[in-house]
Amino acid sequence: MDLGTFETLLVEQAGDALVVTVNRPSAMNALAGQVIADLEALTVAVETQVGSDGRWPVKGIVVTGAGEKAFVAGADIVEMQTMSPDQGEAYSRRMQGVTRRLEALPVPVIAAVNGFALGGGCELAMACDWIYASRNARFGQPEVNLGLVPGFGGSVRLAQRVGIALARELILTGRMIDADEALRVGLVNRVFDDPVALLQGALDTVAELATKSPVAVASCKALMGEVLPLPVVEGLDREAQAFRRAFETEDKAEGVRAFVAKEKPTFPGR
Image 1 (cartoon, rainbow, N blue to C red):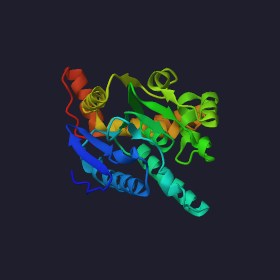
Image 2 (tube, rainbow, N blue to C red; image 1 turned 60 degrees about the vertical axis):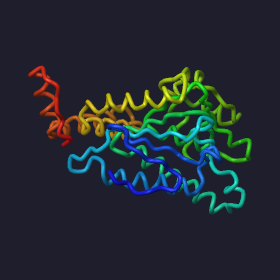
Image 3 (cartoon, helix red, strand yellow; image 1 turned 180 degrees about the horizontal axis):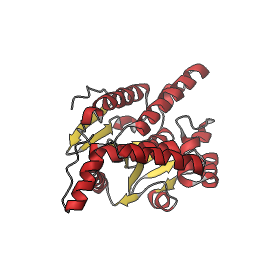
Image 4 (cartoon, helix red, strand yellow; image 1 turned 45 degrees about the horizontal axis):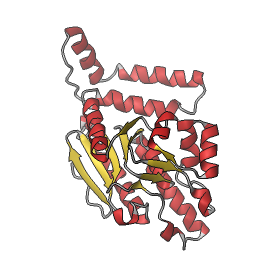
């Protein structure tokens, strides 16, 4: 799977998983403009190669950060220091575009958070389908400490994850929470003792995903994103339409056949 080369990302395939590592450890993996450009190029490349014509070279993506200190410590404050208001808005909108592309990818994206995930780092993690964390992970939206507001989706996605009251508390105080509290409030799904176990846990989950129908997984992901903001009745209507479309797929035919025959399915990905 040829996705190109990237200045600030390490990209490697591990079984059915694509592991994407933000690789600026000297800057705690901060989201400089080049990192955002690389993430943008990567998501575009994945969009064109995964899920088209039954091609599923990967079944899941794991996003993590180089080193043990930080997943992504946040936006690049040094770069932001000289930005004009127009440049600041463009910076926000470009990274927001990356997060929306991650959400729209046809395969699940898992954030494997080691160390600090603050500001833009927390926002990048929340754009993934779910978050796994190592014991040393720390989460927060500390923009108020810099006279700023969240710019990469934190004001929207944090409330979706933890509820509006806690999201307001965390954003307005800029308080950090540790991995155990993040697990308790529903920001992360699982906590692992160390970064090695964290990455292995994410890879194990992708291996589990690889046994499922890739078409059904992609459809479930798209459907859940689509119905999230809708009233119940409209959401149920969209669900019924998606259910109908599933009946048109070869994966549905194979899955039902194998179940009746008491066999393991071999999904064609169409």
